[in-house]
Length: 271
Ligand code: SF4
Image: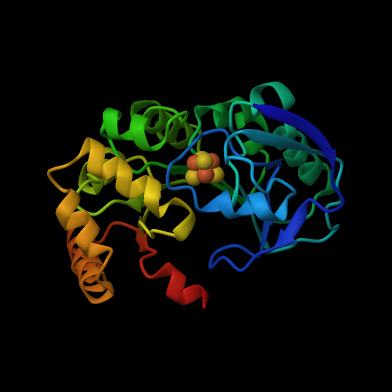
């Protein structure tokens, strides 16, 4: 993997995401190697055209942070994992958190990760009055996780991370994303975290052009029994919409009065 340190101008970028005013991505690229990573489009915008997503990492150095972010939500990790394996050595995310703390910006901090490495920073996380950590977890199936999120932590390690955050008083949500039709055991994930997560969020799998082929190939090769239904669903927009609508009802029914958020049809909301 090609690793570079780069000087950056501004660390904080305005966001169009529904729940974040700003985003901070301490790294360009991500070495977790998720097959479905929507952030792959970043190759074009960061001088990495033609390079494979996951084959490079730029470590951001410097960069300004606005003085006042009062009541603004700042999300770490919209197009990278702020606790990817390089963070262990470079501590970029930790440095930025320290600077935010020292500058006393008043921001609401949100961190989204797949990694137990976030626990290293419990000391600093605890000092923010408004913070929440999201752990992405799409399946409890170790084999499926290994195939689809090649270098990320195992599902069990992530569940343990949720528990430790919860036990340390850090508000934590679990982001069940992306849900693969006919494959993802979202009920198992939700059941495993119901008593330790403050919120459980659900997001469907969108097959974007830059990874559609790879996802279909994985399902065809590893799960041939569901491939015909899976591929037919993504070839028919009406059928696909109906599928997610039915799943929405199923989730509502399953979660009942437990706090949850459904981000299906996310694409349409953003437009
Ligand atoms: S952890 Fe997130 S940013 Fe990293 S490869 Fe996976 S989906 Fe992409």
